Image 1 (cartoon, rainbow, N blue to C red):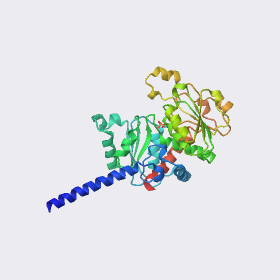
Image 2: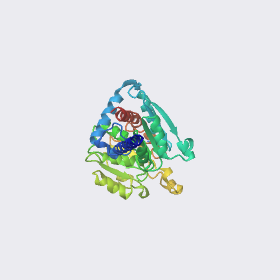
Image 3: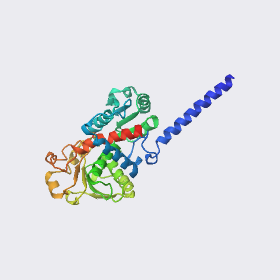
Image 4: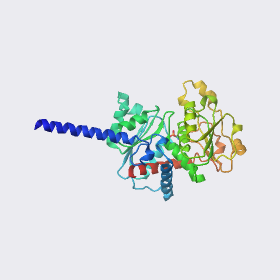
Length: 343
Ligand code: CP
């Protein structure tokens, strides 16, 4: 009797383990086939046209709610915001988004020195702890691949808030929403990306995002040392987005739908002298806007900026980096949380 009971118990444990593994594995499948509900957001590759447009329609609805009033959609839900790298926008807009939907947050800034990772706790164990307390985990980490490890360990949805020089999918989604809101489409666009193509994770996600839609052309303006890796250039080009590398301001084409300026990523340079030499290779000035931007060209930047946009550009009607683009970050993240946690 005891033997049968022991056997039953081990079968139950084995079955539970198998179900849990299947469950975790399923959550790591490309998301376009499975929708948003309880899924991770690690890369723009998880999305397809349908899911992006669904997210944007939801965003538009939430944006229409007047007075930024608090909703109750996520009442009783908790999000863990765990940021191993500094942040102004991504941290605050995630926090604001979750709270505006009626949820609450556990917030860890700089956990590398304030959490038990100081004592040697692994990232997987940390993720499993947040899973005990929270419904979703938003993580920024300096090392590519860490977000996949966290998503593999935690059995609640995990959102990538930036993984080193890898990706920043929610930033790209808010950038794409800003473009879609202005032009009503994500196809047949002509855009410029300038700055650090090699290390800029927002650039990597945005190109991936634009490659999901047909007919897009992106001019990439950077010093030679900071151009896209050849591997990424080939990968994205194969997907259908037309990438054209340029190395001077004079080559910026007329009538772009958007200019997406970026910061040269100081924290990714081993040799700070090289950074100093390259950091202001291309500056967005009022004069440049006057000479080369179209009348509707969106002037975008994921921020922070550190000298690569003249402050005189800020008051231009086309400049959205300090206003619409940043604000859209909160609305897109509200929509994403709603779809992930409520379906
Ligand atoms: N755009 C962006 O990621 O900004 P933060 O680093 O301030 O979050």
